[in-house]
Amino acid sequence: MADVLSQSEIDSLLSALNSGDFDPAKTEDMEERQVKDYNFARPSKFSKDHLRTLVFIFEHYARLLSTSLPVYLRKNVQVEVMDAEAATFQEFSNSLSNPVLLGVVNFAPLEGTVVIEMASGLGYMIVDRMLGGSGVPLDKVREFTEIELTIIKRIMSVCTNLLVEPWANVQELNPTLERIETNSQFAQFVSPNEMTSVITMNIKIGDIQGLMNICIPYTVVKPVIDKINTKYWYSTADVKSNEAYRRSIEDTLNRAQIPVRAIMGRSAISVNDFIHLQVGDIIKIDTKLEDEMDVFVGNIKKFSAVPGARDDAYAVKIKSVYREE
Image (tube, rainbow, N blue to C red; front, top):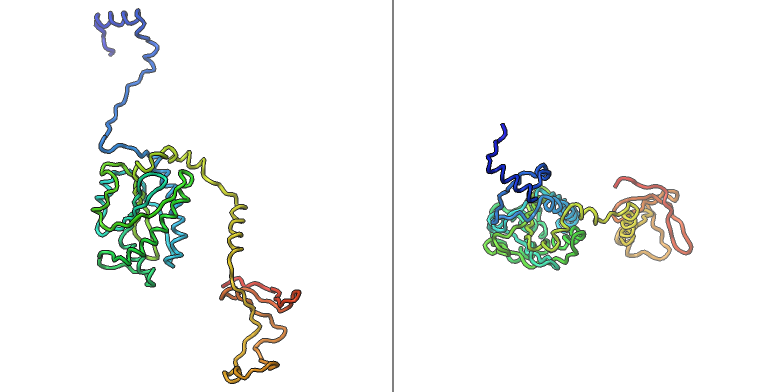
């Protein structure tokens, strides 16, 4: 049952209608306002779209790590983005343990620093691989030595330089690794209540795996926060055609120098016969005149060929290709 208006309420409505302060047609479009609580201690500066775009950026970064780190560690490396979340810097610092590997990265030309936290187990494993070991982490956690930190800093510098390409669609960066901290108590780079985005990545080197967290304060990306959205990121992404990509690979391969050897045959002689070899001596080899020669690319037998000449130089003519190494 509808509420019954009192005489005073009816008089007020009639007065408002006569004065023009009340329009009955607008009452149909009026909706009840929803009031939401706002936490001033934890403001939501990173939206879901911001975090989703950061995942896309660091998925690109993960692919670069997977292809670049094996060059230094001589082992298969798999990197996967696990999660991206918004948290205060105090929450991030409270989750750190001792000892810890914190790479402090200057995100120039943006003002401020970004923190890269690597699991200590990965640090021990990287040191072991760089020094020629099998890559087994330590059973007992201990402090890192200065030599070990120097080795880890080299790998951290590689990881820092790889940030340029994934961020190119948002901001041209010139990141530099300023230092490495091993004590979480000295990890106070921004205000504890400052909102940050923490991107968690899982790194698997051989059979050993660990986490790497990238902590990005809001104050660092505030000047370009409008560009950190999926619509802008996709609209500015560089889409290369297959033809351009093929030409790029061909240009890279053309600059590679690989030794090629054609072996006519083999023979075994004594050291004494070798010492007394004279011009005109004949060495019998284990192949016949009509046999094909083996052609090696590096240390891999790749072709079979017959000897010949072109202009004034010796040459070989490829007859078949060995498909298996």
